[in-house]
Image 1 (cartoon, one colour):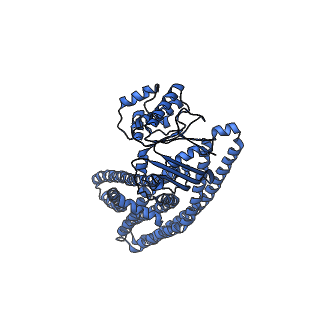
Image 2 (cartoon, one colour):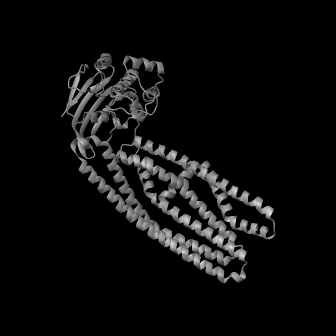
Image 3 (cartoon, helix red, strand yellow):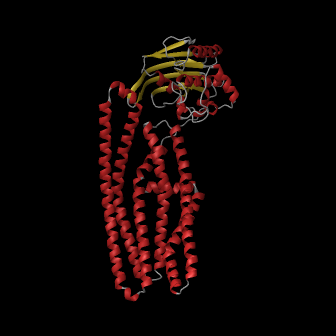
Length: 526
């Protein structure tokens, strides 16, 4: 709970305005809810005195006031929680982009940044403020009930505390079972992602039985863990429920014994207060269980925020030399590259060759600093690449990948954003016409699914044409594959024209072993 409470305090510090507004409506709701029994007492007296007109006016005002306050309260909670998780999401994404220590798989990262963030939104933005409100209702109700009878108020307080103690005792067991189920859900989610990405391979290699058995295994693990969690949750919920029933019976007996000393109206008021307090106790119990279930989400976010940002103090405005000395690079524990040594200076153009799966594309990702953990060193301008500011490195590198990712924008905006230029629509149209791009949907939704494979490759060439004068290192990962002969010739001529100036370093992988690009070096990965 300490970690959750720390995040709640952080949310208040980060969004004080939204919190104060939600706190105001929370207290307003608590006060109105707490004085309802005494308002009803007053209304009953008005009815008794035949002041029906007053009742007709007051009751609708009371009802609409309660509805208005509750609506404003929930809106303020959404704004408070939404504002905080917006800041928290950005902070987590920034840390992931800055760190070199991310050891999580992509599906784990997706789960944390989406599901866990939403759970934190519910906990920080709703559950914890509601707990505050429920406690306030109990305090105000007990304060008002003391006016009528201290002994009965004391019993109501004891009943409330008994419920809370049972809940507090049950929290650890519920939290442990919840963590176990959460882990099983993540494992199942990881398997589904793996299945979805491997459908074609499963069909070709007839891996149906393997994947279907894995599905059964992960579902069984999840269901078994979920059953154990439900046993724990409903066991303690049952104890709480039965305890509340016993307390209500005892309270009824107390009222029955004291009925001669109290008016029927007072007994009704006591009953309403008791039911109100016990209802808030039930709400608190339920909210505390939900908060405890979310604990693992806060742990996951904390792991992200504690990632080392890395010290990047160096700046470059030109790539003059590249020195690569990689002893080994492993991915998921599997060695991908071994004993790679390359030295390049401005004007060099190197063709990286090797068998499929030899690590050619991996080497390019190391040079672009996508992968930062390896045994060895990569230097640019005699500076360790891991000490160079990301922004200055990015400004000097044009990396054209085998499969580009496209923003959910128009083609024009997509190109302006990724190239960080103000190129006009007309200029982009001229380049597209030069490449015989053909007709296209304006918006690149769903990662450019509306584009053909050839059009996607041509968009990479558009980036090359836009940025060829701005960058000093060009990295090409099989950009020419999938191009028609005319566009492939245009690509080759474009690269060769850039090479003639000898003012850049060009590193390329091509689909075929031979190339019409005028590389002056060849490096074979074995």
